[in-house]
Length: 436
Image 1 (cartoon, one colour):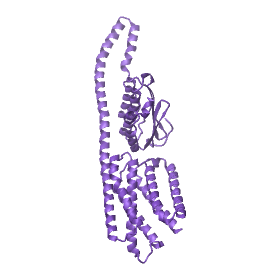
Image 2: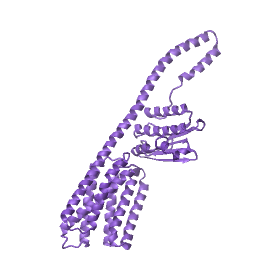
Image 3: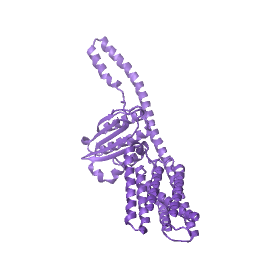
Image 4: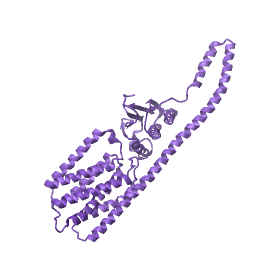
């Protein structure tokens, strides 16, 4: 009974430490607290049941292997629960388990020194309690140090690439194998154990710092890309302003001639002709853009994309409104919306003009922003890697940006239509309100 209790307490502490470590990665848990509380309860109950059943039905010789497997599953599950990218979850799962084994090896050495292993049996309650206590204290210290020195500002919009993962992963995996062998073995060579443990600690520290350096580099590249896209949009706006100024000067000159024409018609008592002429001139005064968003850059982008769709003979239905009370980064939101509409336009351009149709919905639902873009598409592209990767169906870049905004997305097909639905949570200032 004592064994089950101690294992359960140790596992609970480990779960909460891992959750605390990954807590910076996602805002989704804060927005859906009740749902994640249920998931947490399920995880804890499942872990407890596994411990009880394993203790009752599995021989002691196999328990360390089961504990290791359980640690893998729980660590990776919690990482995914906090929206840590898949590859990063794999790296941190291996690294954290390696760190946990380091804590156990160090704890074993310290416990032997404190209790004098020759006088105290390894299976005694005193040895067991002391060892678990020391392991927990060392683990807490490790996690706190990592949390505030390495991943303090970690965000899930940044992810390592596969080639970097292939380089990093072998070190924590090898560390796990070596440390696990030390723990279940009966090697009495203290010098070799200490040497191996120190080497493993050093290698894992190197892995952690390499990860930190890589993420910082990717963060800088990400910010540069974001600024570049923002500058491109602002440059287009500047050119539009220049064109508008030229048009105003031209309009001023044309109006003078029009007034002279109208004056001549009136002087000749050709009133009906003057009225028709005035009506025909109203088109000149029609505003060049419509207002969909309070932010100038986003509003300009929406007008440009809709104009591009019309230019490519794409029928567009839209319900668009983004209020000025939005509290998220408009630059990132502009890029997300722009990419989604671009995908729809590109997919539409690859089908016959008669079938080109895009529907855009951007509206507020309570405090959340709802975005849905759907378009007709060529169903063969679902099986065509070339187009799926870069044109219309490639969503990886949007996924990365949405993580920064605290949003989720779903994309699916129905008959010959492709749908992208995005919900960005808690984006409006003030109290909740009804649907717009």
